[in-house]
Amino acid sequence: MLDLIVRGGQVVTPGGVRRCDLGIEGGVIRALEEELLEAARAEHDASGLHVLPGLVDAHVHFNEPGRGDWEGLNTGSSALLAGGGTTFGDMPLNSDPPLLDARTFAAKLEAAQAHSHADFAFWGGLTPLNLDCLPELAGAGVLGFKAFMSGSGIPEFPASDEATLREGMRLSAALGLPVAVHAESDALTVRLSAGLNRPGATWRDYLNSRPVQAELEAISLALELARETGCRLHVVHVSSGAGAALIAQARAEGVDVSAETCPHYLSFTEQDLERLGAALKCAPPLRPREVLDELWAAVVGGDIQTIGSDHSPCPPGLKTSSNPFEVWGGIAGVQSSLPALLTHGPRHGLSLTRLAELTASAPARRFGLAGKGEVGVGFDADLVLVDLDARTELQAADLLNRWPGTSPYLGQTFTGRVVSTWLRGVRAFAGGRIDPAVRGRLIRPG
Ligand code: ZN
Image (cartoon, rainbow, N blue to C red; front, side):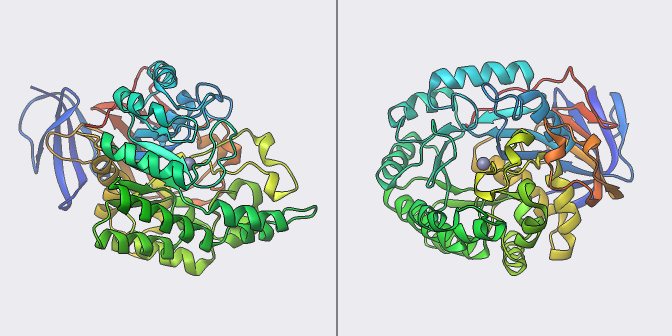
């Protein structure tokens, strides 16, 4: 007997969207048929709704232990579920201390097992301080290693110079794990910032300190090192069509590289930053409208492989400086990824099948998360049920992350509402609330 049948939804599979029933047993999808006649202990009516794979958000900063007051694992994972996500890949910063060795991995694991409502995986850090720890991190089960090619803003997580990155990539290739890079040229951004960061600096000055050129220079170097070392490379938060094109060209030449972008680069422009300010500060920064359109074309056309939220929050007090250079950077958007993509995607030609690939199956495949990312027989029953016709204006009260007031999406009207989210066959979110009894577990790549 099945545990659960989810009946009558429009199911988004890699082969297309079709109305069918899902049979679930032991947290796994056992059947996917037009009409399931088997008996089940429970049934759930999904008619009128679309059933997508729960998001595999491989790029979040849930900063516990150490900076749980910025974002904790309880609040962060709750917001993820409320936004239709079921698995997250947590970045090694801004936990304190950052995740740089087996000891800090163990501390993170303990915190996540105690507080996370969604399944989780961890990135280890790659810095000049911890090259000797990469093997022990691989042994502990990290997804891969995250490096910054420019300053991270956290002194305990220094940027990797070229020699560090080369050695880190060589080691990672031997360990069979990818390296993810924050790609902005340190030399260029430091030089430009030195001239522009002055009393009375404006958001335009901040934008001018981090041009697309800084991204292109860093991506070029990372691609060159990936070619040289044979390391699998993942470029996070690509902000420009030109950056995506550089990566696509290297892929065509045989470099094992993937590109991620984030919903905020697809939703907001630099004019929005100048209007809204601190809530939209990120690095690389938002771009002009024509670059946003190029990036959409890369997302739809295949030059971008994954979408992650880069949910990177901080307490509101760090967002108040009148000098844009001193405002803490990072956008708190984990709960809004899916609604933002459902709202803006159709205008740019994004199909539901492609959306599911970008947000779930592609990151699961790229990072070796077996059983995740797809609505299909044999996969975990990680599901999000969406009402595509619902229109809702986002209110702070809807957001479950630590600091709802810092969301740049507040007041936006989204088309498409997350009705419920299911983790391994258990309803973890519905009616605006998390089931506090639901617990996530560690997913190791393999
Ligand atoms: Zn990030």
